[in-house]
Image 1: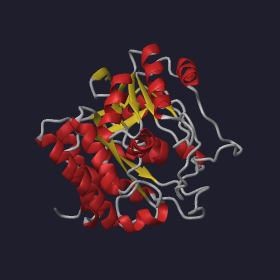
Image 2: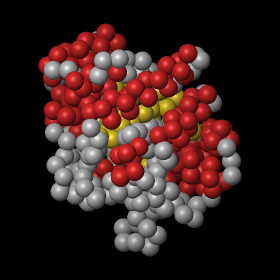
Image 3: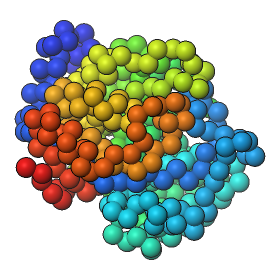
Length: 341
């Protein structure tokens, strides 16, 4: 496959936008969702992460299952999706995560539980002695219905060794998502860019995702429903002082993703990391989804992100309409809830 990162900028955008239009016309999706980051205490010390803390460190916190239920009651009354990720806590047994999911699903049966990155799933396997499939089946039984795409970072080994040497390798991330697909879970995929990677690293990352998606679809599985490019936030990390990815790089990356990942239905323009204006512009460059209301995002903001950490549905609809598109409120599985004409 031709490397789209080598295309001239305007030709790249035009090609990506044509693919988006062929799939979704003028529709742009969003969801009413709530992010729940249950702890920032983590045994891993990824160099790019400003969110993680050690036990008893200033600013560290953890939630009990009851705390999680209370948080959703207070913050997520209109959310249809609870997005759950957190640190790798040194003391919590696997049962804690089962109890938390079960408590949330019992109290909010109408809300979709999208929970735990591949890194967390791998950790649960290690602390429980269970296989990946056994962990996923137990989480499904408790109420997990989808998996987010976090932890992929960048698959290139030479970069991964520099930014997250303690994190699972690319092969393990792909294995866990393939297992999730085989157990009937829909998942998302991500790529962190704008740090030490180059264009070829990004292209190879996208090709590996495309390959796994082809494999899952060939088996009649849902596979990945969306891809989310994540623009690296360097503040308060080991790359503090590095310039953020430019708007051009953000748009190029989203456009290239749309071209390479033609077999993944949706490309997100994640306003949390892109900012509102770049996220809106990306809707004309291949992206068809703005993620959602989020309510409170903690991980990017720990690295000094200075945009809002929540948006209302009305704000998202305005972003879409002012781009000349049609806003579509969706559920977690991209079933349309409401079209804002």
